[in-house]
Structures are given as structure tokens and as C-alpha cells.
Length: 109
Image (cartoon, rainbow, N blue to C red; front, side):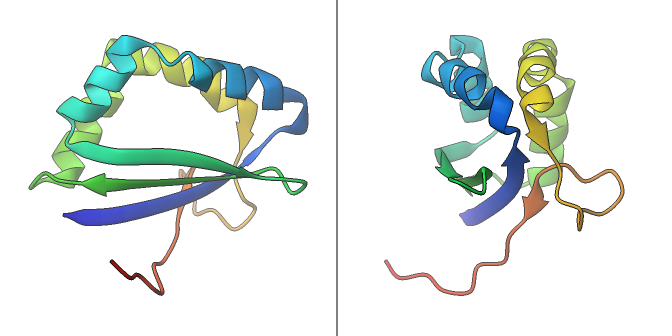
């Protein structure tokens, strides 16, 4: 099992829309997340900075293949077409990077 954490900005004017989308996440999206071996997935919001922080556990054996399968899923692409305009990447993001990975510096079970 791997823990992964990511962050991105939430556009202030899109906060309510983003929260509403996730309060009513599509069943197909939830099914796809599970099919791609992601468990214990949460997104947190830090205000007033409007930073989204996502964390999940990956329980598969090939994260690159599972993330590609998710990205290739038509329903996921429709979902991202709604959620991506609510977000903006950090200035420090690498070219092509959207959510930026975070380094785990401490964990305690």
C-alpha cells in the first residue's frame, strides 16, 4: 500500500460548485476510483488560501497503469471537465502537472 497526497488551488468563485459536485459525486466516478485500486480517498479544503489537499491509499501493483486507466475512462473525462475549471495549478507546478504531489514527512499508525 502506498499513501499519496496532492494539492492544488481552488478558484474562490468556484468553491460552492466544487463542493456541490463532490457532495453528489457520480456513482460511476466512485466505482472507477475503486477499480483503479484507490482506497481511503479524501479531499480537504484550506481556507482562506483556497488550497485543496487530496490524500488516498493506493492498493494496486501498477499505479501508472491504473492512473492511465482512470484518465482514459470517458465518465472520468466528463467529471474532470466539470472539476478542472474549478482549480488552478500552483505556480511551482512542473509543465503538464496539475495537482502537485506532496512529500510525506511524518506518519504514525
